[in-house]
Image (tube, rainbow, N blue to C red; front, side):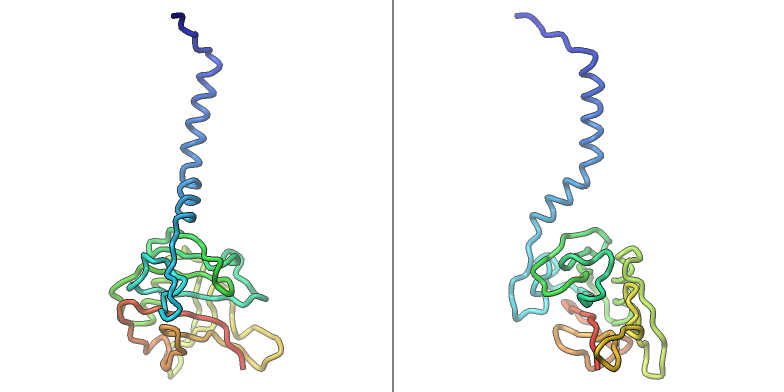
Length: 188
């Protein structure tokens, strides 16, 4: 049996191929993770459409209007873990936005809101004014509701708590395990 001598030209190509695989590994991992993402499918649950791994954890979502989408979260709803890593995107939602989840232990709504938006590495910067009634959130992710114009008198960021319009502001909201907060633009 004769050995086939390895060409010196193949060695650099092999090294380049290994380096390329190492550099592409995070992209491959993210693509596989997105394909493997599974979501809660229960229309009676406030976790409907969210990752199954977030069931019974605290989640905060922000939905953006179709005519003023977020520059980064404009294709389905991007799911971000509490550590800032991307879980995937669910295109089954009616709209675009982002959900940040997998949190536990928060009891104060405002503290949870600020911590969850911080997990997006600055993509959901929040601005609010402190009024005699508590914090008034006017800007999320660069979208200032006070600056929106259209066929309406005014707009504001509306807060839903477990699928229902919150009866208190974010500063007075008491959180429980498994709570889902959702912010969306509402008009009058």
